[in-house]
Amino acid sequence: MRRVVMLGPVMNRRLGEALVSRGVQFIHVPLFRLAPRLGDWALGDDITWSTVLIVTSKETIRWLTPWVGLLQNRQVYAVGPTTARALGREGIDCSEAPPPYSFESVVRYLPFDLDGQRVLIPGSEWADTRLDGELLARGALVRRCSVYCPVPTGFPLPYLRLGIVTGK
Image (cartoon, rainbow, N blue to C red; front, side, top):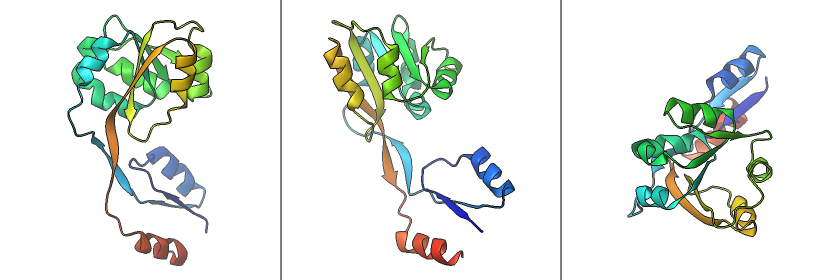
């Protein structure tokens, strides 16, 4: 029997069900969870500063919710349909970058001339920062803020390895 181990914080139930229906053993072991970033950051000030907001994941929206009112009169771009739907549920109008859902699609989708635009990219402490350089090259002022961070769950890794190898 084949085994698939998912180590992320959120289990994709549909993926798990699809794999099980095909005879695959699906094991979810969350090695980390998502938590608000602690510290003295002021997301409200960052949003007020911005003219453009790029939201790269649905997880980010959870941490943006208290500041939804500040997002009016800002151009908001979503990376992918899941992120766009989550923004819509919060009442935030956005433009959706086309597939593939990555920083490359955002770069292709945004207007070429961003001279003077103040772009805010909220997201994970572990987020890919390659988008920043592309935006700066187009004249944008870029500010990235970490609104959440991965926190280890403390799951003992030797037990995970033992379970994968032995199937117990």
